[in-house]
Amino acid sequence: MVRLLRELERRLKAKGLPEKEAWDLLALASGLSRKDLLLGLSRTPPPGTEARALALLEKRLGGYPLQYLLGEVEFFGLPLKVQEGILIPRPETEGLVELALGLPLPEAPRILDVGTGTGAIALALKTHLPEAQVWATDTDPKAVALARENARRLGLEVTFLQAPLTGGVKDLDLVVSNPPYLPEAYRSQAPKELAFENPQALYAGREGLDVARPLVQEAGRALKPGRFLLLELAPENVGLLAQELKAMGWEGVEVLRDLTGRDRYLRARRPSQELEREKGPFRGP
Image (cartoon, rainbow, N blue to C red; front, side):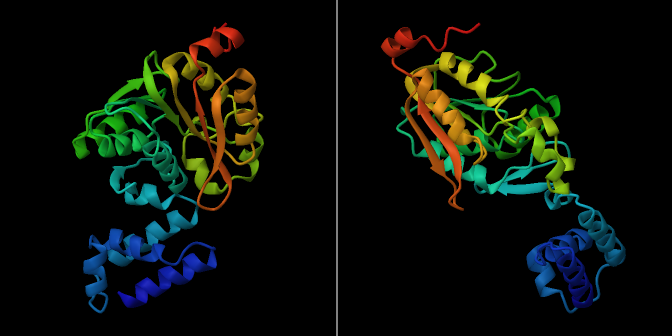
C-alpha cells in the first residue's frame, strides 16, 4: 500500500492539494481506520482498494470536497455527518462557538442558531451548555433533516425548525449565526469546491449582507434587552454591518478577529428598552 499512498500524495501535491489527504482517501478506499492503515502499510491492500482510491482521487482532483467524500467532519470535537449541498462546517465557525461560550449568559440560557446547516453551532453549544434551551432554524429541508440526524446520533436535545431567520422564537439570551455572507461578485473567483455546496448558504447579494441585515432586525425583536447577537461574517463586510448596528443603537458593538488575525466576528447587545424607544430601530415595516 506504500506505493499507492505515494502515488496519491504525488498527484494531490501536483494539483496544489494537501498531501495528507492521501491518507484519508486510502483509508476510505481500503475500509481501514487511519490507525490500521498505518500499521498495515507494508501489506497487500484489500481487493479493489487501488481502483477505489484512484476513483476517489479523480473526484477530489475535480474539486469535490474531501468532507463530502468522507461523509463526516469533526467540529468542536463532535463528529458530524455532512452531505453534498449542505454547508460544510469550517474552523472559523469554531471560533464563533468559543466566543458564544465566553459570554456572560444565564445558567439556563435560551439560544437560537440561525442558518444551522448540519446543526454544528447548535449542537456544540448544547454539548457545552447542557442546561440551555437551544433552537436552530434553516430554510433548507435537507439541512434540517441532517441536523436532526446529527442530534440523534449525538444524543443532544435541540429543536430544529424549518423556518427563515429567527423562526418566531422569542425571549432569547443569544442569537448566533454563520449566515450566508459572501458578496455575489466572489462567485466568479470562488474555489471550485464551493460549487458543491448550497449557493444560498454562501452568497448574500452585492455586499454579502442581504441575509445578515434582516437577521439583525429580527434579532432585535427576539432578544431580551441587553442580550447578545453574535455573527460570523466576511472581513470585507463585518465592519460595515458593525457601523450600521451602532447607528441603530445597539450596545457593545465589537468586531473580533479569527485565528488568522482577520476581522471575522460581530458581537453586540440588544439595546435597553429606553434606548429602543428613543431610537426605535426594531419596529419593523
